[in-house]
Image: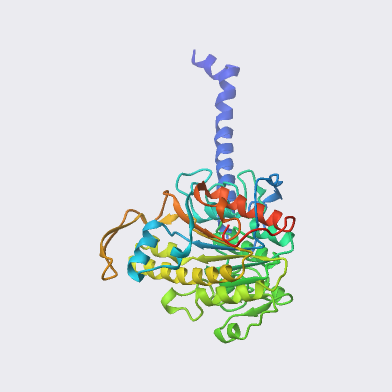
Length: 418
């Protein structure tokens, strides 16, 4: 029996193929490990990979014909990153009256991602920028790798000027979602390269470390690409308060005021309000109109840190920038002003305080991450009637894109407050 077992062809094949099969599994596992290690290593670096960039753009949806009345020539889009209703309530309690109270059209928007009930900034900003749901982490890139054209790309295509103003690095998820197509938000160096090629007219924020060659001080790159030199051929580059103060209204400009992120609101040499004013002065020179994105980036960070005082400070700072936008929209009656959030952060709860004394004395946070509740929306100007009520974040993106695609085709009829 023993002799037959060892010389039987069936069992002999198994006996001799088992070591080879184990070796194959080990080699395969090693290859998979090396592959994902390589991809992880190169996230945010200057190495080009097909696993970073997205593919061809998805064709846009047909433009609806149901819009009535005047359509906006300009769109001012403010995003309070991580700003929920409790954040606004706390800011109002401390200040008394907010600029957000000037809006008559309000609503709520749902924020879930394609693959998660609780979203992140990349997926949420992509929904607002493109009108499509994507997976968490993706920057204007579908799960199948197809690129999604953004609001700013449509604006550029239609002859409008474009701008972004943030208090974070300009390579962060929210600003990136309006100009870049990458598979994950942490490919910072690839994002910087795409921004440099985007044709954006005005860009204010932090993050110059991602635009400098590796040999330069403060650089965050691992190659010698000098994106600042590239951008200087078409834009004025400013990095200081004095240079910012000398800006004129007739030039494209890139203003990068920190290696990565700007300081907290209380410590900024150049405020979000000042950057917004400057951007509007430059962009409004285009007779075909403009689209400007303004983000209060650090409301979100304060929520992640469960820091109520910082959170209120950043929300108030954002509200002051909204005043600039509202004043502009009142004077320029072809401007639609939209204010919303990508998601709420922190599970922020107000438990004690005083309206009379303008104080918040009791707060709680349920998480140091994002939460899934609907976030507020405020709108003013032509087309604002279509933005009220309860909608999804993709609806907001699609409506603004529709306005850009239709604005130069339809006559201006009606009043500012539509």
